[in-house]
Image (cartoon, rainbow, N blue to C red; front, side, top):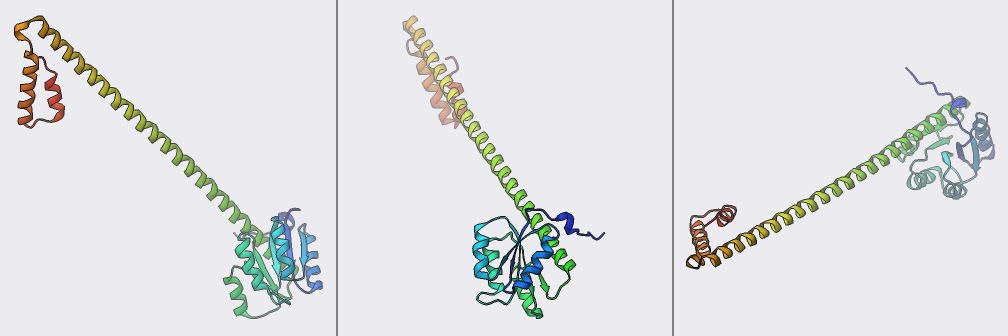
Length: 234
């Protein structure tokens, strides 16, 4: 189903459109057509006048510019707008009936190319389509920014979780090491107590442990198994 654009219902009082043309009559005609349906139109007689107006205010939603003007032409303004205001659509409104010029304007980033003379309905339809395209581009930009923010937040959350996990594992390893050291000290203390109790067997447990560890080393047992064997009662 074809979407029917109704500019009278789509325009907003905040939709500011800049008209750039060296002919005052053309500017007034364009401004009157736009203002009649609720747009706010401003006029600039040259590219040199238009650029400071664009840079001083970020509320512009569209630029309508002539192609051939004294000084810089419409293509120069088009290049400037695409470089410095990439989400601001620009429509060429010109009397130059040259398909190569139109194609060049589209290649440089113009949204459309409106030939003079034109009907009021043509102008309003082009403006409505250009503004809809701008709206969709800004929505897409906002969605990408939100998605990037979400990814960064989730990445930071994951990094913090991994850091917490590493700290927990390190604490666990330290706790196990401390426990093993305490266990070894306790075993050694018990062995010394037994040796002191019976003079005939003094040093027996230590000798047995030493021999056992030497044998386990020769057998190529793992460090973990040798650690367990070392703690067995002699």
